[in-house]
Amino acid sequence: MKNKFIKLLKQFLFLKKFEAIRYLIIGGSCSVGHIIFLYFLTDIVGIFYLYSTIISFVFISFLGYFGQKYFTYRNFESKHVKQFSLYWFFIIIGLIMDASLMFFFVSIIGIYYIVASIITRFIIFAMNFLLTKYVVFKS
Image (cartoon, rainbow, N blue to C red; front, side, top):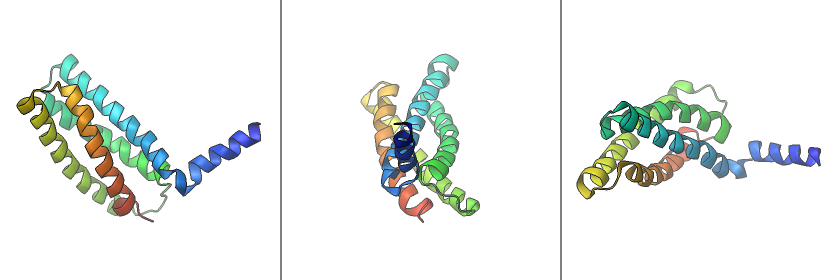
């Protein structure tokens, strides 16, 4: 039983077909972390929600890079500068989209900022998956 579990665990960790599941784990963890950090910065520290969004997005994106590179895509190539640069190019685009959507949902439509952040997470999540898989960490 123990050997079967270890074999299944190795398949999950190393097989390409489980990439999407690993992305969900890392991306989902980063999304939850972003929302928690956003809440902390906005409600506890008292920072304006758009500034909190930007700070949280940038902080969590650093963690996301390493999680996606090493865990999700099992990418151990030494092209760190190229990959990191591409990753941050797309992160900046995502950050602009995120802040714009947050402003739209919160300031124009009137949605509570946490709910707005959850909505934007789904949009950014899908975009980041496609860009990291097919552009940044393509093998």
